[in-house]
Length: 291
Image (cartoon, rainbow, N blue to C red; front, top):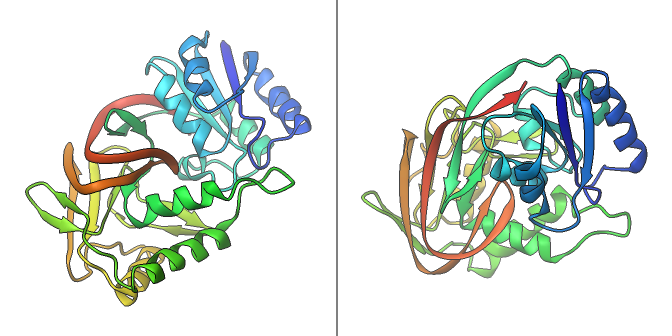
């Protein structure tokens, strides 16, 4: 079988030595062609042009998201962890080490999964407006360290605290989930883990599944205590739905959100810019991934 390996050379733990090692593992099962990304959005183009029966992506969740947006659904997809968080390969049961994951992928089984869309942009595991999307933007603005790595989990924690503190320890309602009510934030999940803090998975919508539609949870005017309790419940795997002022949905195909003013939107940890309105949709049975 022929396959294309798309590599983000700027990802946190991608080195030339690891690229060669991943190529050796995958090359034992595939006739492999490697392509390096050069800019944001380049992996979308490379995935659209990829020849062969399979596409592998080596990098972080950003390049995984781009490959999903370039793939047509007819090729097998495999994800090799090379970023800081690597939510998607971890959610698919792959090892955290790139070489071990590549080795596992050569004998992996295909699984058909659904994807989400945010204003047409595909996402694999999560999207949102509010505290998460603001944090993504602020951490992105910090740039990379001298070793090329992005800021770690501690930077995100500090950013979240800073955003809540700047709002007077209570987030104002800035959006409306059509037909359901108002909120300060909304978290949309296509699988249980929204993100990780180190080894701890945060499950804002623990009943979400790659086999079903989208789940979501929105909170109205949460204060610091309710926000902290929400993170604790997410870390315990119990989600946000039980919090006071929460509205939620399970296995839905469409969620329409209108913002009071332009708000940041994120999908799979990628800043998609400011939006006035967002339509979250489920694309059922979208792609085949190796697990």
